[in-house]
Figure (cartoon, rainbow over the protein chains, first blue to last red):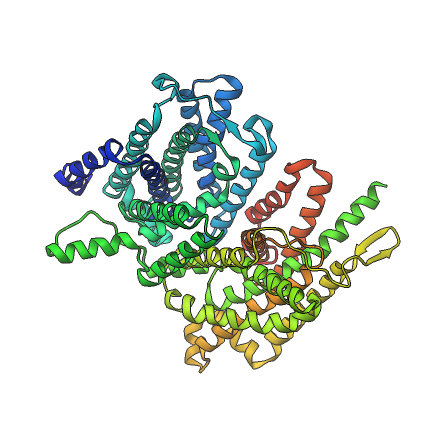
Length: 345
Length: 288
């Protein structure tokens, strides 16, 4: 582990930021607390996706499967078989990790190019949604409703919006710390070597299959855990939300706009875009259907045109310019070479 | 009895699949010269259909006639989108372009929602209810027309690519943009024209799909996904492969919905896609 990791994790700014965030439920009106909770859920999901998509350069569109495992499958275990939700969440997370590793294995075994990998994972995600919609055990198209939250911690109930805010904050922080740890550990160097040039990485003795499987498994486990928390927070599990590939597309959007391959970028992307989308919907949703998404889409396009490296790195550059050059924990942004390879793939 | 149903399913699947092939050809052309994977491709298809609807609502134009208006409109839109949005980021990360076109998907989809509302719309055509009966097989005329038109279009494209200077410059840019530029090919011009052509093709595909297809602003992404699957199945830039990919997807859809009960039948196309791709990663006709 490079000292950079401890530098970030033990810095006072880090702890002040966490403490300030933790006080939000004490003074924020409930509507805004709901938005903040959603933002942190997506921040965690984007950070978890970043391990595969940003660090390893594998454009996985299968992550709605892992969210669905944590949300739909774990809830089905509770509702149909009466398994405690903590245990169910654990089972779902382990299965997600195994599925993630299996997908990485398929990718490697059949030497898929970037685009083929993206579309095969998309096909997996489409199939998973159809399975959820067609299988009554998983609630089918009508979804599942979890029992009312009575604040019983041992049943994975966190009692009201405060508890869930702290829960998802902890999970998002965990996803961020895992990102930081990977970036500063040998694994992170392996992953980035794989991303930038697979053949060269292999020639240097980086185990492609092993590292890809580890990255995908870690990402899948985190995603599944956040999925369970999201499901318990929502109480009603709508398969068109929790098992839909559109969810992955949103996660990838936050990660990309925030800054691929950096630890903080995906978090920044979600924390800026989720509230933006929610507030636009709150303000304009009743005015003219579609108007808020229209504006949202326009903002997305403008941001990509203005900051093609992402918002996070742009902020980091600004901060560094402000304080003079000082080392900040960050990974190199994906190079143009990766893009060229991806296009060829 | 059983063979009748199978034959019917096969014919239906082939007819629908040919249109998927046409839609994917537009995307394949664009990809081959610019490496852009356009996630708003399906939304341009629904844009074409909605413009046809507007022309029908205003002037009672048949979709087969209004294609002469929608084609230039979409071609210009395609060229403009390339020039203003895609060109600035074309050298960036693949994901950036994908996200940009997904942003475009939100804009188009919700723009149409704002203008046309969320209720499903229909555009009638003189051909809509006509049936072609050959022996035991009953075919809807619009699908037969779509099939024939797709084959003719594909043939014209092949001729264009192999026999004209423009086609040769497209192939040159596809093989090596830098070398093509050194040989005096205006790469930017080729790309903008191919975008115009690729999106313009959607006007034709839209007219072919319209009779009998209900319109909804949110249908674009689903078309995009089907198109991308077709494209990958065809091997991205192999135009014969792409048409074949469309037929495979159409066939597996038709057979899946008839033979496998319920929603699980809809899984079949994806399953077939995954299996084909695993064993032929370069597409149906591609060289590994």
